[in-house]
Each structure stands twice: as structure tokens, then as C-alpha cells.
Image (tube, rainbow, N blue to C red):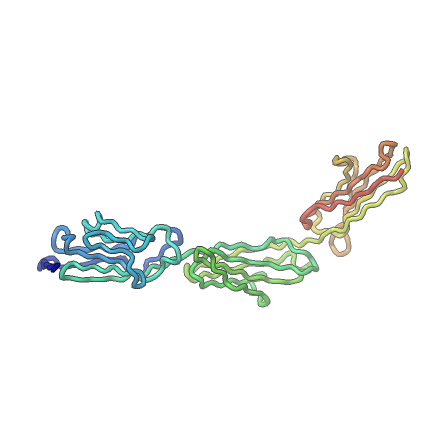
Length: 320
């Protein structure tokens, strides 16, 4: 079968295509339309003589040649809009994989034009810093994490009262499943009394957005209390004293209470004193007269403090 192709020349139908200025920068997850408008010197283009192709990094994505053929599920193009001279490429929910050189290639017999648009994808970092709680005279680590950013170029710095800290450790960059990146910088030190009024800052320089992000951290210096319980000689029908002491805690605010059978002994009383090292010691004293019903009964001292992940409980069993 011999196929004969007849090319119809349109001497007055000169081709011009117009695209977006390159580069086109979009935020991760947004939708983008890459413009490719074509004009000829006739009211509308003759679709029989029109071929449009879009490429990404020289790989064909979609082609219009009498009919529309998609080679990628990531893009769409409208045949109806092509009839109106708009051969734009739509990309929904942009990801880092969509970044690159896009080429709109148009043939309108006998003319041919192509234009290239660079698509850049950006995502700002999410910054997370560690809990400001630090333990006096113990090794502590402050961590600043930047995650979900794209492209990779980023700088994370720890500062103390505005001065850059040198002895910090940078993690290896992590590539997330969505193509974004994550990284963290940590500072390990042993805080002293002088650190409680210092401001530590995590500063993130993100080149892509020419952005500077900073999270300030006012450290809360804490000391874990040491808890002891004691009793005076407990005899039936005689006044007895139960004592619970939380020694060396910082800051001052603390809850120390006696309980029995799950119920707080509300008639106990508290006394807090300041120690030479500026920590505090708090004593809860419960004075009562035991009866036969108290024989073998367990009293518990419960201590809650900001330095404790869980309350401390010390039990004391009465032997009358």
C-alpha cells in the first residue's frame, strides 16, 4: 500500500509560540500550568497540519498529532484548548521528580518552533528544636531538625546568645520518600548554673528561598530531686509523724504529698527551704494518731516535678 502525504503550505500562516519566562518556580504539592500558546496568521490553526509535543529532559510526555497521546500519567493537555491555540501542559501536585527542562515543540507545516522552560520545585523546611528542659551537671544534647525541604542546599547552625557554637555535630542528609530532604544539627554539653539565663538559637539558612529561619530556646535548667521517706516511732493511739523529703530540686515548684488508699492526706503540711547551691528541698509532714485499722496500712509519698518524666513514689508500711 502506497501512502501519499500531501503537505498543504500556508504562506500567510506564520507560526509563533509564546511560553512562560524561564525558570518557573513552584511550591511542592501545588498545581502548575506551563504555557505554550501558538499563533498563526489565520483565525484558528488547522489541526491537520499541527503537531505539538512536550518533553521533559528530552523524554516525550505528551503528543498531539491529530489526536492526543499521553506518555506520562503526571501530565495533561487539552485538545479543546489546542484548537484555541493553547497547548499548555498541566502538572498537578508537583513533586521534586517533576523538576527539569520542559520543551514545547510545535510543527505547523511547514514551520517549526520550540521553546524550553525550566521548572524549579521548592519546599521550605519545617524546623523542630528539642525540649528546653536541660539537666544541670549532666550531659545534655540540644537538637535542631530541618525536614521536608527541597532542594537540598541548606545550612543549620546553633548559637548561644548570638554567637555561633563550634562544637556541634551535623547529621548526614536524609532523602524522604517524597523526594524532600531532612537534616539535623546537635550540640552536646554539660550545663552549669550560668546556663539557665542563656538563649540558645537554631538558625536555618535556606538558599532556595533566600530565607532565614530561627528558633530561640530559653533553657530551663532542672535538677531531679532525691526522695526519702521516714517515720517516727508509730504506736497505736499515740501521735506519729511521717516525713517525705524531696532534696535538691530545681526549679522550686514541686508537688509532694502523702497518700493512703489512693486518697491524698490533705492535712499534711509542706515546708521548702533554699540550699546553698540554689536548689530547693521540700518536706511533706503528715501527723496523725494511728488506730487498729492502720495496722499494716501502706502510706505513699508522691512527688511530681518538671524534671521528672514520671512521678516518684516511695511507700512506707506501718508496723504498730
